[in-house]
Length: 391
Ligand SMILES: [Zn+2]
Image (cartoon, rainbow, N blue to C red; front, side, top):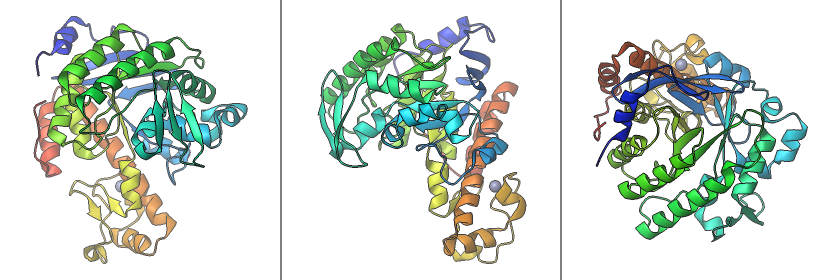
């Protein structure tokens, strides 16, 4: 860590006196509680965004998502571009109408899929990236112009810039090139047509390299986006340096704009990025964990396939308000999981989403009360995970 300009900037910013996009309500250390204002409603932050890659949060009805208190959903440009296609979605009224969700939606640009499916990548140049589609193997090309058009047609509330996300451990020269092209592409995408009221966030890159991360952040901040994501982390690196990099990256982002950490959703990770000044995050973890037959809980992760749950009359988590915990026992959910009954996966998905949403709501409350540090220590202790890195 060389410097922390955000803490200085935060001092200079009057709480509640922000731009139209984001209102900062309270800070506690680096942690922030605020509100993101979108065309489909306000999002209290910090906010966890369940992932609805293919216009569905796997197995969960939007009515159920609303009942859980889901503040905002994530959709994916890459997948929706290929199936069913953004023009089909637009013809049917846009992504909100298409999937029956009236709340805010953020769409990723497709950059993560293009660059994380590395064996499908054919060519990258300053204009864009060519790759083989995972759907039919055909050569396809993504450019900032296409990323803007897809998201404009989908009509999401927050559109992301096309970026180049590198996996952990690539040579510095590759990270450097990714930063250069990510800025180049953000500059092109910034002024392209957007859906009514659509916000546009840029994505900083640079991996764990402090100097590159600073350069990426500073270049993008100069372009003045509605918000900034921290990309290229949670891609296979160790956790302590990842959290340090998140803090370092956040320090170069303006205090009056929302900050989005891409790809974290485990209870510990959520707490740790909130502690470092992050406002939004997304991850498939709650629903993917559910599909492996596991429940998030204050006792840690419960593998329901384990025989010790065969006669367990307790809910998945004592004190959880989700539909699964309100009505069903661990023994019953275990039976459903072992019999590969769809209801088992659905109940676990609802529970895991509820667990993370409520965890984030509790963090927000602690920030507002000025008790975040003690809440964090208590929560990590309950989850039985040691604190890692420096906040
Ligand atoms: Zn529950």
